[in-house]
Length: 458
Image 1 (tube, rainbow, N blue to C red):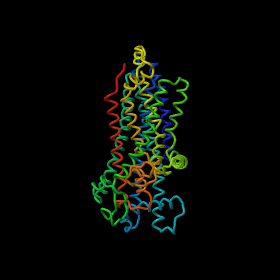
Image 2 (cartoon, rainbow, N blue to C red):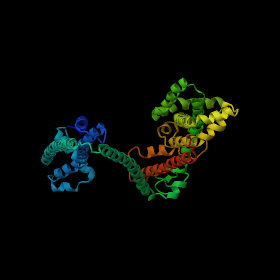
Image 3 (cartoon, one colour):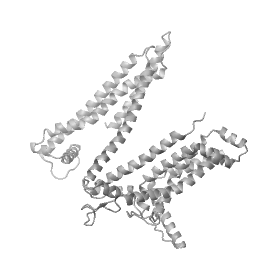
Image 4 (spheres, rainbow, N blue to C red):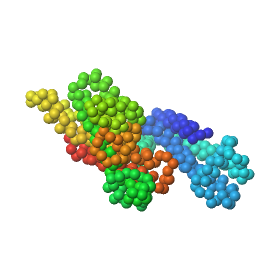
C-alpha cells in the first residue's frame, strides 16, 4: 500500500470520526437539561482531530526515519570493505539493491551478498509497511474512541479545535519563513565560497563579464563583473515599466471610473488572463513575432534593431505585467470613497478633474506600491529574457542591441556539464543573492509606502 493510499484512508476515517462525534454530541445534548458548551460540529471536529493527528504524526516520522533504519540494517550484512563507500556510492548501491528486490533487471550478475541484502531489504520493507499500517490504525481508532467517550456538555470543544487550528496556521507560517531563511542561507554560503575565489570589489564593480579561463582577466578564472548584467536587467525592466505603467494605469482608471458594470465584469477577467499565460509562451511570442516586427520596423525607418534585443524583451515583459499594474491599481482606486467624488462634483469639478485632483492623489500611495511590485516582478523574470534579450553581457546604453540579465546568466552558469565547486558555477549563487536583495528591497519600499501614506477611510 503506497503512502497516498494511506493518506486517503486516513482522511476517510477522519470523516467517519467526525460523523460519530457529531452524532454523539447530539445524543448527549438530547439527554441533558443544560446547554452544550459548543456547537455539535466542534465536537465532531474534535473527535476527527483526535483520530487523525496522532496517526498523521506517526506517518510523517515513520516516513522520515524508516529509510535510515533500513539502510543501517542492510549495510550491517554487507562485507566490511563496503563501509568506506561515499554517500553517492551508498545511494547507487541502495538503488541497485532496491531494483534487485523488486525484480527489475540490473547490469551484471548480482553478487551473493547483494542478493542476500536485497532479500533483507524486501523483508524489512514489507515488515515496516505492515507495522506502519498497524500503528496508525491503532492510534486512529484509540483516538476516535477516547475522544468520543469524553464528549460532555462542559467540554470546551471549540477552544480545543481553535487551538489546533492556530497551531496549524503557525506551523504553515513557520514553514514559509523557514523556507525563505533556508534559501537565503544556502545562497549566502555558496556566495561566500565564490568570493573566496573572486574579489567582491571585482564582482560588484567590474565592467567585464567573461567567466572563463582567461589570461587577460583579473584572475585565472576569468572576469566576473556584475555591472553589465545589472544594467541589462535594469534596462529591460525600465522598458517594461514604460509599457506597463501607462497602459495599466489608464486601464485601471477606465475600468473603475468610466466603464459600465457589464463591460467591467467582462473586461477585467480577460485582462487578468494575461497574468496566467506561461512566461515561456511570452518568450516564444517575443522571439517569433515581436522581434522580427521591430527589426522590420527599424529597416523601414533606417534604424538597425536586432530581433533579440532589450527592446523586444522589455516590450513583451511590459505586456505581461500589465495585469499586475491594472488589477492592483483598479482595486486601490475603487477603495476611494464615493463621498470624495460626490464632494468634488458638487463643487463644480468635472469628472476628469475629479479623477486627476481627488481620486488619483488619494490612491497614489497604493498605485506607487503597485508599480514597485510590478518592477520586482519584471526584474526577476527569466524565460522572456532568455529567449528574447540576446544574451550579450556587454555594457552599453542602446536598447536596440542584445543584452544579458542576471537571471539569464544564472541559467547559463547552472546548465551543462559543469563543476559545481568551481567559481564559474558558484557565481550563480552570488548573482541569485544579489537579485534577491534587489527584489526584497523593492518589496519593502512598496509596503512601506503603502502603509505610511495610505488614507484610512470610514
